[in-house]
Length: 84
Length: 144
Image 1 (tube, helix red, strand yellow):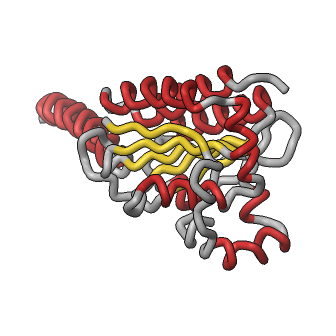
Image 2: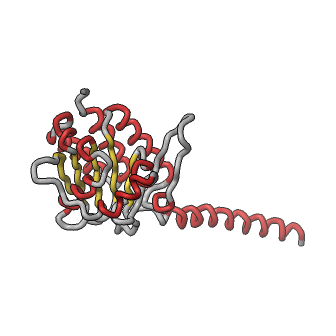
Image 3: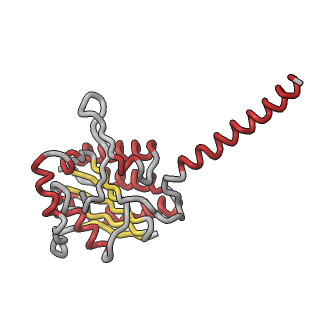
């Protein structure tokens, strides 16, 4: 009886372990962006020194007004555009 | 920043100010490893060029160029800043450079970087394309 429990229990344990590894990791990564799927995340903005924008009284005081900033006059900004 | 959509990850390593993580970013589209790569690329690009690079990932309102330029204008020093705006849903990439940056980083070099980035995006590598673009833009920026 103990032998049967040991063999069957061991096999079930291995199956449970593999199941947890496979589906546990995939559910965790499902929150990440996957190519071809819709981008359902809040916009993120990265800066090397974000404290310039999100900390400090001066920066905080400027934020509300900045929402009304108009684009610069044509020709002053450069860059490039791309599509894929 | 950006109408409350904020953002931002980064900070200094190796004895400087502690790294700051923001929930919006940690729960965002990138894995921790990708965030570290982007953070590293941003800091390298900033130190190498002396400019301020930033990366925006999210939807852009139409006209997308106007929205990207508006975001660029919200940076602390727009004239010396570069914004990489990526909208995966619209499959659009916008590179915006400030007036002073434009003299050191011509639009032609931006277009080359945009080609490299869109190639990576086509292959499904969002973070890789961003890192590649940052590296390419920083290396093409002429020294003062």
